Length: 273
Image 1 (spheres, helix red, strand yellow):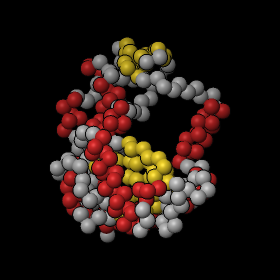
Image 2 (cartoon, rainbow, N blue to C red; image 1 turned 120 degrees about the horizontal axis):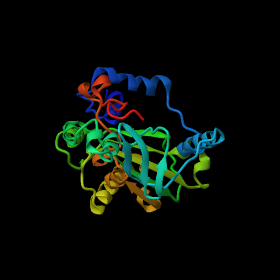
Image 3 (cartoon, rainbow, N blue to C red; image 1 turned 30 degrees about the vertical axis):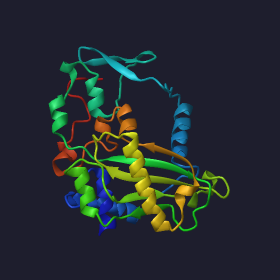
Image 4 (cartoon, rainbow, N blue to C red; image 1 turned 60 degrees about the horizontal axis):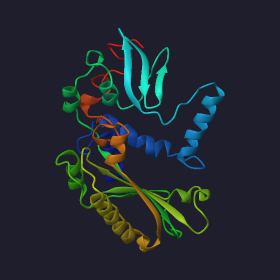
């Protein structure tokens, strides 16, 4: 049952309290299966970029939006770190509350008080690990379900603290696509669900990383940490820099009263374009 309920955490729910509707997500995983593009997930991004360019789409990168210019009920331009961008219409796919914070107050649909009252989904502690050896006994997708099942979710949804002995996911993508690793080497991706809004000091990040690796060494029965050639951790700090509220990667939690028509409207009530 834990395997069937674990993915509810990525919708922002404790498995014990998730609306039954979202069990559909479990069926998607186990019924439809999981796909992985050759060359890695970023190959999908590259393909979309290439197709869009062929259709005449122009991309502007490395330009942080720092302001929104409006006239009456229309967005006229975006002020960026590299100048002003004008367009006939704008579609914002950023964090909702972050983009609204750039608008004049009388053009915002929701107040800061509204956002503070909402339940946020967990965020993710990611670690990318390069190994100078090959992993003999693993598959691409792996879940480690801790004996501290309830306390892990309590640390996220009740206490908002760093977890002790959490459940986690780890991937070994070279098992599906050997081209992703040099011969005789391997890579790991670790994901630990954690509470949003935490201060992630270097000491705390490294502690959770090493604790997770220690437990992974027990599972795989190999001294992984002796073979780390590279590792990079991504957590709250990086997600906050992307404009994600309290560093959450998954936005608003999909609780019963934050689902369907209870969620914020996708079309602004105060702006037409």
